[in-house]
Amino acid sequence: MSSLQQDPASSTEKKVVEREEYKTGSTTSPGLSAWFGGRNVVVGPRIGPVLDSIFEGSSESEPEENGAAAILDKQIALEDGHAIKYRTCSWQKTAALLFSEYICLAIMSFPWSYSVLGLVPGLILTAVVAAVVLYTSLVLWQFCLRHPEVRDVCDIGQMLFWNKKWAWYATAVMFLLNNTFIQALHVLVGAKYLNTMTAADDNIACRTVSFSIIVTLICWICSLPRTFDMLSKIGTASALFTFISVLLATIFAAVQDHPAGYDPRDSYTTASGVAAVGGRPIVTAFPVAGATFVAGMNAFLNIAYTFIGQITLPSFIAEMKDPRDFPKALWACTIAEVIVFSIVGAVVYAYTGNQYMTAPAFGSLEELFKKVSFSFMIPTLIFLGVLYASVSARFLFFRIFHNSHHKNEHTLVGWATWAGILLATWILAFIIAEVIPFFSSLLSLMSSLFDSFFGFIFWGVAYFRMRKADGSIALVKDRSLSGYVWVGVNVSIIVVGFFFLTVGSYASVMGIVEAFEAGSVGSVFTCASNGL
Image (cartoon, rainbow, N blue to C red):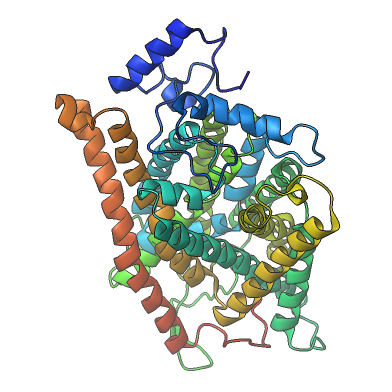
């Protein structure tokens, strides 16, 4: 029996009752299980037929055999007897993957965001973005329960937009670019770390490019494990080291005598002739006068990027033994995120101020403190890029070897293809890291281009597609207050997504242009150090 089926075993009478619930639109779970998961979750009807391109053995003419429970049964049965099995993750292991994805280096961009937005708006936006991402992730989970054959967000993209192949290709392009940009970010920051730690050594040839190559090779080797079950173990250690890193950075910011770059003069002129502000750290509750829209938008996009990670969630859910338990992992991670992000951002900003802020904020610490706290970030610098590389490789690998024994067995062809796909993604990531060699602007650009779809638009559309499959959109069906509220919420989510895509992309590009004009970033394929 599938883990999606409820105990005791389903009877004919029970199936009739469930079908009637679907007809009336009652597809949410009893009590709180629609929000927290568990054994009482009721799986709603599909929005369309099973796609033969992503699940072998489907039969559109037999809907009873294409229910969520039946499809999950088939998936598990097809893996029996094979050396490599994918549906092996418990909710605890999935939580480890989520923690390793979200408890990451981007946390250290929160102090910079708060310095631009002001502490009060920054904290409010942190809570609001977390709540929206939690809700849209639950919508995504409900969609995956109805369609357990989907393996990644590209399958969802095709299903959401009426099974059109163009939707699959468009989603696939964004999916692969998003993941590769994240890999590039970790190549960039890995080189930044090595430059920071070896700043006194002047004998390293073409420092940043050389270090980027080293980081790329290390990440490629670490990407080779084929299942999330294995990666979850590594991810647990990664999240723990990241937590230690940001905790130390927060403590060091509070105990150090002065932030890095401190100057006791209230105002002065640098050696290069630029007017600068010094003195005690300036901390503001609201944006300072003269703050530009571009800077504020980029600061907000930095916060959004750190929270938005729905692009990987379908892949995680697709490898869970019981997908109904996913919300347990999601809630645990979201609560930890809000607490850690807010405290780290607020405390580091309070002791660093507007004048001495860097992104990531390790650069605002004194030399010894910076090197110690930054060093604990090493596992995450490698692992998170590895996680996204694995998601991309899995996407391509499963389609190359669809219905092939190479997918589930240890074969030379299978492993050579897997390693080759990973190497190609890491080479592309290296090129991107050298072409866009700056941290906060790269975060903003990624957030505006890709999170607009994968963080907002897709899940607003998914809500309406599922409500239609239930029999009617609640607003049209009974004109209840809750119907109006949920329709308004999901329309707003779609609108916010388009705002990210248009206005957010404009602000990101302008931020990059301004950084180049100001000479505050390195050149393309630079040999100069990018250390903090």
